[in-house]
Image (cartoon, rainbow, N blue to C red):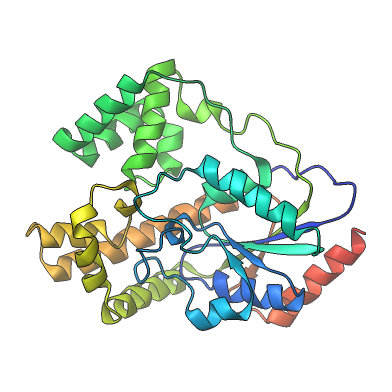
Length: 312
């Protein structure tokens, strides 16, 4: 990720990234406590108040430790895009930087992290009929048809996108179809000027450890009532917010298309795939300082304090 331009008065956005289930929330809270500041969530799955267990929303005691923003602030019935998030996040940051030298941002959604750090790319307008046809294709031919088409039209973006997310697939395909150019060709065109200096730290672990943590988290979600939560949301399964791992697999179980055991195994598998794509996305960025998930928090805080002091 290109660095934001140096602001007139030094303000710092400390961003914690990494794969799902790695411990980003805990680290972000510890950093926020150390710098006596607040946390922005850029995890797009945690924006919606009706989705709690399946999105691993921070526990109430965690949320009470330091002020959080963009946690369950929307409804699944709201239209909420990454562009909306960028605008709202910048408004909140500008307000927080009035009284804070540093603010913390945590989340594994690379697109949303990048929107705050660098701004969104500009895309040409396309005819709305294209999206309407793609939605019909999804309903009539299924997700696999969209995946195959995107792989053909834009193999580069196909490797990076969450291929289980129909909203992302349709967005890319409407640009490909409407312009005749790959969606990826419009990405990373220009970096917007920001009024903060980004410091990005990443948490990682060996793949087996990440996968074990994911499997364990899914089991805990089931024990905590994910099945019941998904069942209450089943009537709204057509909504974009619910086209996500942890819910769509259980919706297939409710439709008698698979067993519960298979649905749970699919949640684990799809979450592992998601984590792999997260790491692929973030490891391409050169300005991330990586730490092992079991690192001493004092090491991280010491490094951050030194970097902030050195940039004054």
